[in-house]
Length: 175
Image (cartoon, rainbow, N blue to C red; front, side, top):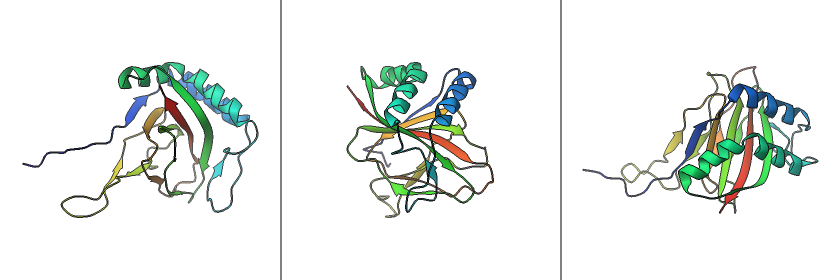
């Protein structure tokens, strides 16, 4: 019998009062300019002007959802370090990456067609039996909040639809 010795926990939560919060989040994004950075295929608000305000507003809008994260993990408080929006137009994608020296990173699926893929996570070690890289996706829809350890490599497959896939990403530390 094979038993797992280790696992990597991920927090997946359907955002409460989603329709109301989607409007607030969309209005927040509309206040910030999207641009394409060198070597990226997608548009982002990251490293634009006034990103601190973006993080503050995001925390206000999702206060009860971060409270749920704290209840389930045992943390007392979430500190938002950075937050930004990403828009994946047709054929845009994100290469494999991780978020460095923070505790957790998160994704809010703001506009996600059921035919569009969510984020793919890469296990930090290969399958013990086959030696292959292990990949995993969390089933997501619009209004899903996912929080994972920041060291976890992840990527986004190309958007094959004309409809943009829009997410909000963030980095947090917890106490």
